[in-house]
Amino acid sequence: MENEHGSELGTQEYWESSYNREIRNYKNHGDVGEIWFDEDSQQRVIDWLLKQEEIGKQARVLDLGCGNGMFLVGLANEGYGQLTGVDYSPKAVELAHNIAQDNNLEISYKVADLTQPQDDLGTFDVVHDKGTYDAVSLCPDSPKEKRALYLATVEKLLRTADSLFVITSCNWTEDELEQSFDKFIKYHTIPTPTFKFGGKVGNVVTSVVFKKL
Ligand SMILES: C[S@@+](CC[C@H](N)C(=O)[O-])C[C@H]1O[C@@H](n2cnc3c(N)ncnc32)[C@H](O)[C@@H]1O
Image: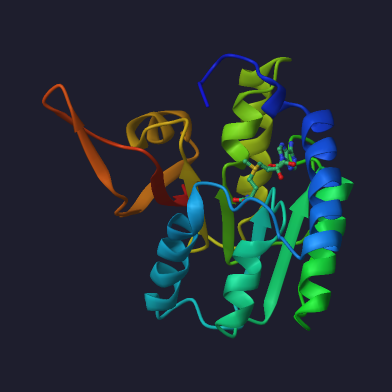
């Protein structure tokens, strides 16, 4: 994904038709579909959360742009009990709901556009994003404004000053995230694999934990 250039990945129509296809695959072949940035990125975040003593298994966790919900399935399998996923694609929510139901997992899912004010979702101890801020950034229509609206929503969804916003991005570096998230303060960097190119060390994906200021 490239930053500041619109792409179909920034449109609701794209995700709706993509999850429509994935629902068919799931029904016909039991394939849950894509886990963005691979299973390792998801597991790294889950492993980090498991090590945080202040985040108990009853923590309220919200996954933003949950897609097929596999991050929440991973947390449910670890015993977390208060899990919610939201996505603006009704087909994503349908797929995630079907997967949770087939695995006898209690996860609550809702359709919500996170670039719109969300007063009914409540507040959470952990708000998670993997690839959703990236998708919002690719919106062909006013991406800068959309990113600001998205971050304003995130800020309101965090329950207290100690609540965590955990974001994994392949579109923005850690420095860029820190610069754009001026209402948040970096709390921790979850190490991700690095590569070396032209003498410089970079990351393919970045996972950073923020708290609100
Ligand atoms: C790259 S996918 C990541 C899906 C999932 N988080 C994962 O890691 O597998 C981006 C997701 O964000 C959702 N999304 C994009 N913009 C959104 C918005 N404004 N509000 C809610 N969901 C959005 C898309 O429907 C899609 O499911």
